[in-house]
Length: 358
Length: 124
Image 1: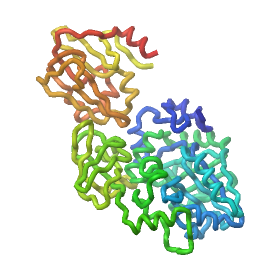
Image 2: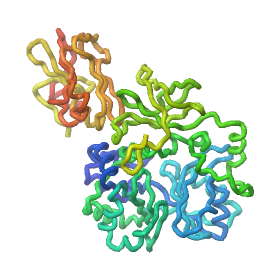
Image 3: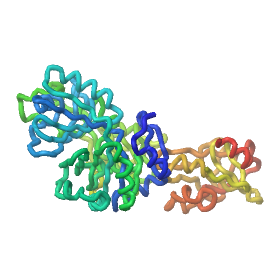
Image 4: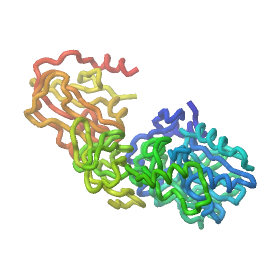
């Protein structure tokens, strides 16, 4: 199995190491729920070095990204500005979801999922044929996400000098200095940074953050935090067979520029014109129990399926994202261990910035 | 290392059973099981007076990670369920052999249990 530069730091911190898509990663360091609360109330950090950074450089970098992804990089005008998007196949299914950062018209940085890296790079290279662009995966970068209401203050405390680089960053913007790339982004619904840095600096930085009181958090807490924040997970809410239109990700698709014929556009427009039949909603279980992935959802308009189910530590209730027939409202039932249990239908997010919104 | 206590017996499915010496037994999940399951968020227990047949699923412990059934080790009748777990399911994590017990029951004869030593050996 592959290991990140922080593997030893996880073992030293009693991380419970599990196989996560071929990577040996920490599920938790004792209690997933305590780690979850740590991020909602203070500051926690995640090793996300398994994710892949890809740089796009060349005279046609911008032209290429305009056809590669469904959101429009033409929106990005200022250095460091970030954009969330899906990358689609010809059928309009999602090859991956990603964040792209603007450096200049000939230089962009993209972060893609770990489990899809090989597929993505092959796909990107195939699409890049004929463009004057160089596709450069940065496999020697580590990435640490520091998240929580006190995350930024603790990063500045732990990493002297970084405040001068990142102190003024607005949400969804990044700054860089030498090998350090720091973005005010995350996957938890809290404020914070995602810090990319050379792998040789990773362990030192991790220790400095520990000294500043940032607690290590595992992939278990990362999943409950993102689910509360209503954020999609590739492979759960969407995949190669599912359109962003069927995953409540319509906001990430930009069809304004009719001349921008990005991959998958025709399929999306056809699906939109034919009528989208499914979508993703949030569920809150009424009563005790925990909603699990793939459980059947019974609605008045037909059956659906839980795409991500869990117990929300912030709400103290079971919550889920589920794919249901378009138009389903108010309530449904979930088949749990051979019983039908009522659930309320809500619009995610469930929790943002420490507050319950549903 | 998981804690295993010498004063009680164990099942292959990682439950402990303590003979109370008055025809009743107390049952819970082992330290190994609670660590594997992770943070407990919900425990579904039978009511006092309920009966279960050998190998019936008669309790469910749910953690953030998974739901896990607990099966009756014999034909039995419930004499008490640990109501504290309704509000504090995390007792199963913090005190699996004491405050985190699941049920007390009456049974005539429980077969196939392991000693602490034999159970410890299965964990290696």
